[in-house]
Image (cartoon, rainbow, N blue to C red; front, side, top):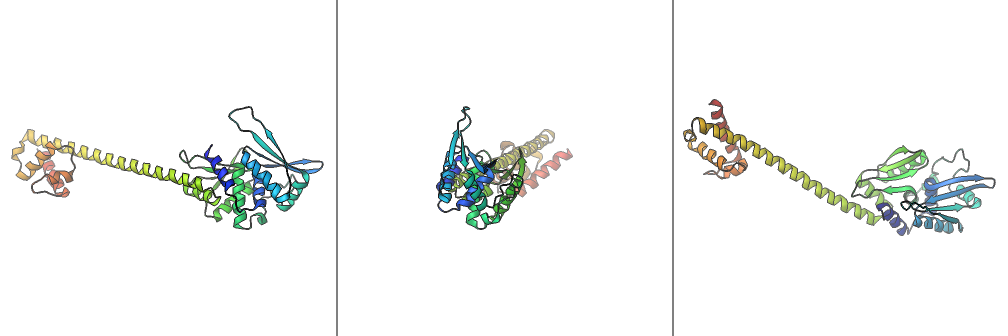
Length: 305
């Protein structure tokens, strides 16, 4: 199963206290279409998720005492899932539209979400759960951080964006294939969304991935930092060695005073050590700044030659 499927299964398993009408309204705004005929309007809901289809069926029975028709459209392509089509008759569709204040006119179906449907936190969370169950998708966090929900109307997406912002979750919207995609890119915001919709195990998985990524990034940063420092140390030591060799070939190291001579021999014998380590080899030991001072004196001698 994909990470998205795991989230949806978990949301459904944790639906202990939710608003049925708000959730049904979310399904209509994401996977629903209104079909017009001479008898009125019929709502059709399509999903590739069997658990979601069963949830819709049970919610319609729970709220309207109605057993809807459901058919399975089999897909011969092995890579694609079957489609579950839920058909709601004209009578219940009309009642549902009245309950959710949804226009049955083909000209103003996109009026958005009626505020009465989402006038409490419970209703808002139920709507968000239904929206993700309808068209939600979340990448495996080990690959990338990206969660999205697709809406047919821009104003519905904007309302959901505002709804999320009220819970402290930032999201954005863009248009794709005549639909409107609300998306969240920040790992922390995705974690907050999953927690809000009660996908707690998925939160743990995401946080574990985040922790491992942070550890890996910290190790890489430290390795890169230490490698850069080592390269700097080696480059500096090579330059110092060349200075000492120039002095040796020109006037001989024995011409140096004892303190500089000791440092010169120490550097030639230990070309890879840092200035601090070099200072600890001196008798008596000297500080890193002391080593740097003596090396500068050696450089001045070499420059004057």
